[in-house]
Image 1 (cartoon, one colour):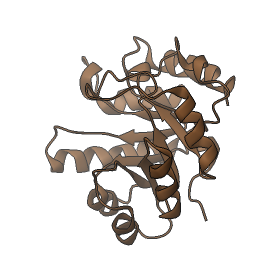
Image 2 (image 1 turned 45 degrees about the vertical axis):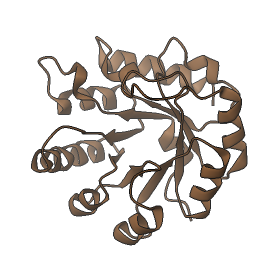
Image 3 (image 1 turned 30 degrees about the vertical axis):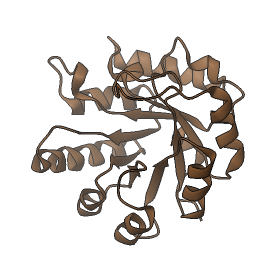
Image 4 (image 1 turned 90 degrees about the vertical axis):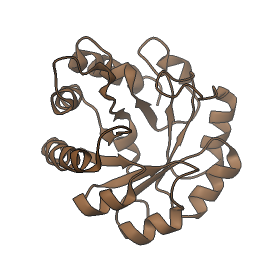
Length: 212
């Protein structure tokens, strides 16, 4: 059984504090939700854990008000503690089987897959969806290696679970992913660096509709 509906991955907003300015992350996430984000991932690398927990609890309530699920990046224990809808884990994070043990059968677990082998292994291990990239490099991960779009397509066709593309995706380049078999796009700066987040998210969502 898969805990993730394909449609939920269409426009996956991944948070970043870089562009907060005078706003709070809560305010920016709400704008993304108003603009039609279908899934939110809270990604925090710097904040103390107590602050992340408070933020996760507040965003969980916010996302659920919009009928959208909240995924935490990496932190399986915190996801279990706050009752988040799931986690996303990379290849160097906690083992998938261990994460499933902690979270139980009904939570969403997404896994980063950069090769067909990783994709198949994650599917066999019970992942609900895959994140593959970086399809256009990355503004947030300087060491991210761009993924050839042919490989992205190969990964999509090698598994039955949905695959979301990630890495440097913006309104300017998203149409290049047409026909690759993705369920949606995970976006950081393409949403949160927009001057008008709600309008930018809505525009991106309209473009994504054309490619999936």
